[in-house]
Length: 128
Image (cartoon, rainbow, N blue to C red; front, side, top):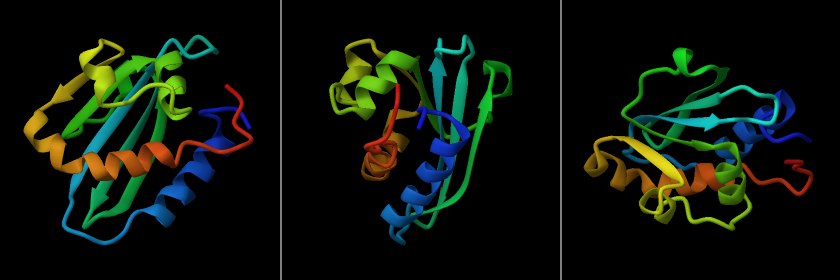
């Protein structure tokens, strides 16, 4: 199953819904994957309400990236390393692998949710 394919996206969405639990967290976040193998830039938008996934979308092109409370952007290869557990997604911001957009103080309380979202990207059958 190709990473960031429609098949992968459907499984990713289902896994997030299984992993998240009700709570007070409400936010919208984006991830922008630059220089994907097919030559495009792809994004994923997540909207969390009361700790649960309320909306998820995937698209192509920086110009169609939805507005969000915060987001990150980086090369496809960096996201792959993060998904495989080879790169810490938080430390990688300070190391220059990812660019963070938004207010850090609003994003920090969402770290637990982001970690669950990130873990929901990994499937044994992933092809990168």
